Length: 205
Picture (cartoon, rainbow, N blue to C red):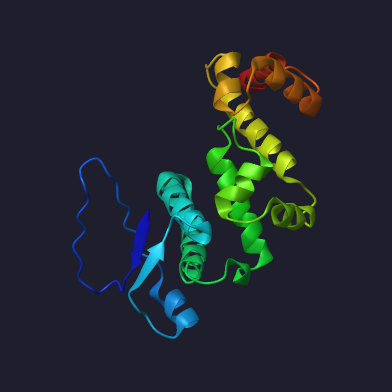
């Protein structure tokens, strides 16, 4: 997966093979120029480390654009512009705050994948597991806790709908209904079914 960073006033022709998909995103030109001192056409390797994070950030931005405020949308665009300037450079140049934001973005995007673990998360962003653990430890959490809490948050949202408990468990990345119910009860002090009923009672008031 590759990308190209070009000036917004430069002509281009986007041609994709049948069955493939493309994304065109307009990033703040000033942000790019401020960081590089120029605007050069650059090839972006989106299949490696920071490039994968950039691709994920942009696709998530497109998917969630309807629910974002203008300020939030512009903020993410600015972060994407900064990351685009670092795709061919050193990801360590990104601030630790941005690293955490990128990790949270990856987990949010892949929470429904039961194969997502701390090791898989580290591999996805191109860092060692020890690096990921160290960054998240300073935020008061761990890779497994971040993944579990994100899955539970997704499950709570889905429990507000009509999907079965089994379907909610599967859509939230839990390997089994038993694991889902045990994790949910340990976190909330009630079963998913009880939580759904309590939410229904609150809405009915």
